Image (cartoon, rainbow, N blue to C red):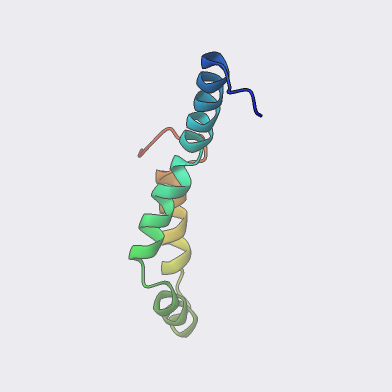
Length: 73
């Protein structure tokens, strides 16, 4: 007993879902690079050596993949 959606409703929903997916591209790209880091070891080494290697690596990834999705710089 449901009325099927119109083509326009389907197209509108597909466009909304694609925009939502596209808006999260930066997050997917960041995650891939975060996963490549050995973050716990970096944090431990920074604590022992009074360095900022881990912070620097995270900042570089965030700069490379900004939330505005402009892509790598």
